Image 1 (cartoon, rainbow, N blue to C red):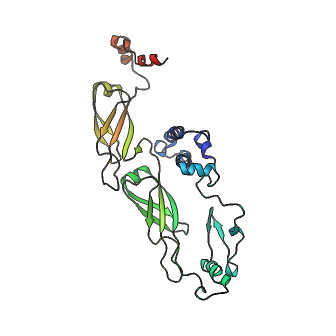
Image 2 (image 1 turned 90 degrees about the vertical axis):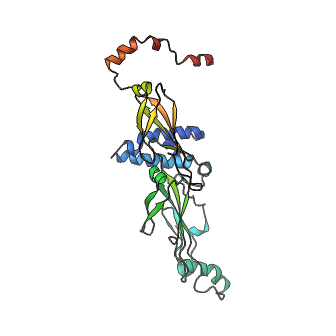
Length: 310
């Protein structure tokens, strides 16, 4: 991935709020749900999501700026580190794969460290007796899968695939433990565990704030003025919402218990619906004629409160 600052179109001195706004703007433009079948938009969305994931995390952003990790979040190896040239017993060497370091012939290396350097002392011959090492993975999970729970497939470096159970209400940065899916142990010892860090992808219009969901809902002029029931999407499926007569852009309505579930307490958050009055692209002649003769509308100044600041 290229420079995350360049991807989001922000300066390196950008504030958290500037980064958040830049990401939201780009996410709405390139989200796959709004661009069905567009592979370019899908790739761009993944790129900006990864950039936002790094820059919205204070510690990751600090480490990236300091050159400790790269733009994909991987560790940057120190220059001249001895393992680049190190060899183990019998010529076994360290290998690098995909930007990660891995050991070849772990038994031989530990034998060298604890046995051969001690003259082959008793108890160290034949390799170091230990359980399997743990491994860690990052997994990108669609917003609704994290909200509702479900299966998500991950491809492991050894070619195996696993269908992971994502718990309902999974949060960004949450770590899932996969028992026995790590490195194999030596001399019959148990296999290590795998730890999967969940990274929840943003949604086209849902925004999670703690356990609450926030969504901006377009409504017609008639629905805002006259009121009525409208269909609203929620993470659990669409529901009907009563829009009060005389509603305006910015009005916020609450759908109780329609948010995300808290894994610890079992309590579900709410969904907050912010109304946005949207006119048709081409208003018809009758609407134009009405507004031209609407005296009350002519006397209303929605910008009056701004005058005290100018």
